[in-house]
Length: 443
Image 1: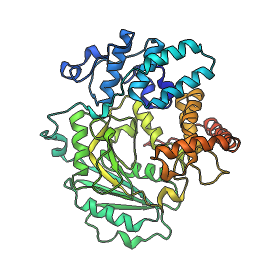
Image 2 (image 1 turned 90 degrees about the horizontal axis):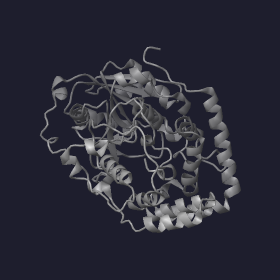
Image 3 (image 1 turned 180 degrees about the vertical axis):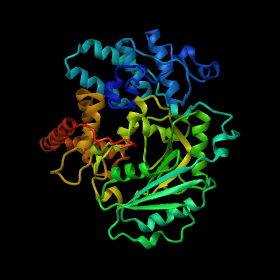
Image 4 (image 1 turned 180 degrees about the horizontal axis):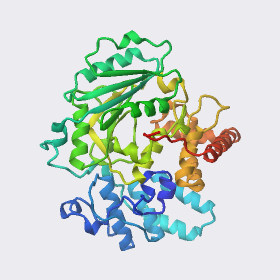
């Protein structure tokens, strides 16, 4: 699409062609008139194709979900249009970032600066506040919900019995009743008596190896349901959680419903998740999938065991296979993100923040994922964008000022950070040589 997305979103799902050879972005002229009316044409682009691409970008960002023909290729656009696009949809600092990168790459400075000056005249556009509406969704009566197919809820757990108690209580209160619960317990010591007395169809699998993706794969193979609902052991949900996932799958004829997370009781859903859209992620703490998805693309890749982005890699396979993954604002969970138990005991808290200065940065599985699907060049752009702010602790992840400070500190720590990155690159190369460790349902 816009080539500057190579700098801004180098490893995002939507940059890649799907199996059918097309991208996710719809050809605007083929959209229904009621959708086109909610898009805003920008005649200040120099190229008519840039205007069309901009409208297509708007459609996806505003939540278009449909079957209009999509682009299979994109034309090269004028440089000023690339800068205009960056200024419209990203913080101004990122346009400066792009300009500096291109000047350091020995691009023509006169053309670059002139194009930058033209582009910076664009006003910032916040598409998340202009979402497309699905007016009939509220009154939609789902035939799928009425059919009551069996749902298999899968919960890996590790040393979190106090939190798991609340998880199971929430499941007892669900308004959708036809489900089974498969808990894969890796706790030490294992408390078998904990599972007695629940008003649930519950199956407990005691797993000695502390391995998240093994746990999920094992449970998926044992699941009897035609729908798989993946969940975490440190979350809370309302009584309509299951039915909201089912309703969205039915309404959009989707294969995947990706729920949203909030971090505080009563908090609003973040603006970019507050409406239906094609999801650009998959969070295995709150997602429902038709079981046929696993039959088609396999289970989770165990190259991510005790590391990060295993769900992101699976989501990529979902996207590339052409399945529809809908971001569902009504299937909410409160994610407590407790500081003990779970993956906290197996690996790092964050993919770009290792536990020690002698550990690889980022976690090697992150680079394995980036390089496998996007290539080495895109992985390097992702590192350049993500490594400097990662120097600051996780608790400052949402603090823009502290992230800027982190970028400056990373300059002082450059030799050490480069050693960490080099070590991670080496380990990811080893993973790439080994290849994926993806099991299948019939293995």
